[in-house]
Image 1 (tube, helix red, strand yellow):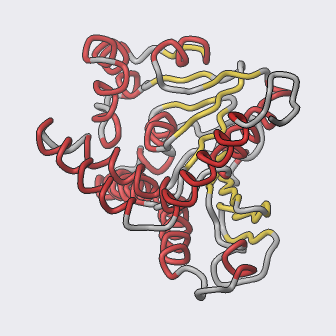
Image 2: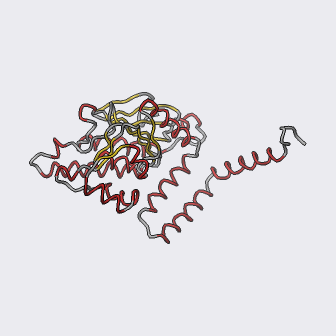
Image 3: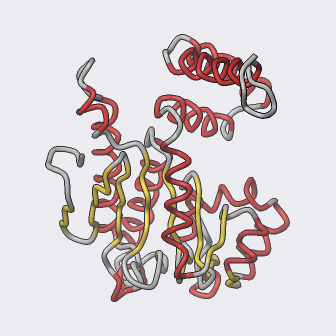
Length: 288
């Protein structure tokens, strides 16, 4: 179910929200004629959708309403229309003499990626073609990423006289300081296979198998309790901003919070039941 409306597809401006059913929602950047490059307006629109989804999930379903509960979004897939994920910030807007215009783009992208990290749902990047500059930063702000083998990634800002900012700050923690320096100072692009080696994406699939690879990850996420995943995502985000001792303590608090809910008890009883059934069966499957 999409926030504030019926199931189906909704299009406004340059972002399309698709309710795929079963708890999956796709956000599609619809600017294929510009390789889905981000303008300040497009960034605001994407941020708006992400914050609407967060508010919708946080309101939740009425207690006992299983139909409404089943309709709640549980996984978001972020992808670009056409042949590219996102070619970066829009150079037409960035190159205007008005310095404030370029700053608007940067601020808009910053708020969009902050909304992605704060969303209490796993966000999966579905990447083909270009994921450059702000596009690679958007990928890095997602929780998981699957790339097609035609994907090209990089931080090309040095080639246009600009430093890499915003989510580029995440790169040393993802790829290591030495490799981050190479990416940010040289500005070279690289293929999906290299992105997999660097830890920027979780899987690489053939172009014609990309959707199936994303579907597989989404299905795995949907098998888990939504509140558990939201708690884990928030904890991972906190870990990146805390000293080690405080990060560990935050984990202890999150563990206690989870135990106070229903999901752990339900899952552990189910696991114990399966273990008991196996113990009562002989190797050939008979009882006794």
